[in-house]
Image (cartoon, rainbow, N blue to C red; front, side, top):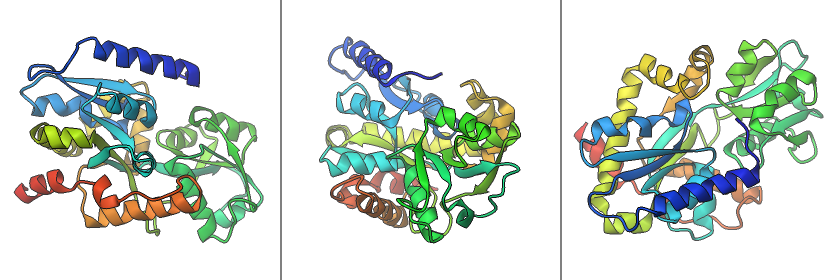
Length: 317
């Protein structure tokens, strides 16, 4: 379902107002977590089985910006976010902290099934659909640059909504697009698309994608709450990894056909672990964002990413 930017903003305000009606939080209030209704961001919908107390409420959003706004407004205790968005928020001084990974991979570069494009080098001079300011834009620019194509002059980048990329490719309005799942798999199954490349392999950024975000104040005031939420996140991730049929069956209830999800599954990786190498990859991502002009300065990555909660869990494994 598509919503305009104005409608999305109105819906976000309504959600925040409704959450705020409950008044100041107490020890008995349910914990609140935000995420997307997608297969790769599904873990919060399974937290409750690993949190016998307190009650948990999960709120679904359509983009990371709205989730972060609700988090900063105090209407959420934790939320999902793309790592690019987390870097962008931290670069502006917003008090956000990534406390667990959420997912890896999930992106693909797609071209017409029977078209002449056989390699990334063949994209020179072509029209490529993308969404500005996303992980996908950064991966696309990296892939083009590595193959000797200047993203600013060697191709024509066309702004296309994720939901419209498949139709634009099928109609010939664009020659390729870089998007997250399930849209690449949908293009393949519907017979008009072919995956040309998975753009995150071979670079310093790697396969990192999204994480779970809290406010710095929450860590300072309620470290046990953060620890319990991260523990539930890790446990939910591990359970879903061990039960792929249940994972995809639940994801299918969000609206994507099971057949598409099964096709996309090898390109989606649920995650919770973070380490020093993870921080290095996030720093590489931030460096590319600064070079592209998406951010004006880089944040302190050791403050943006708090490894303590996942390290405690990993030490017990």
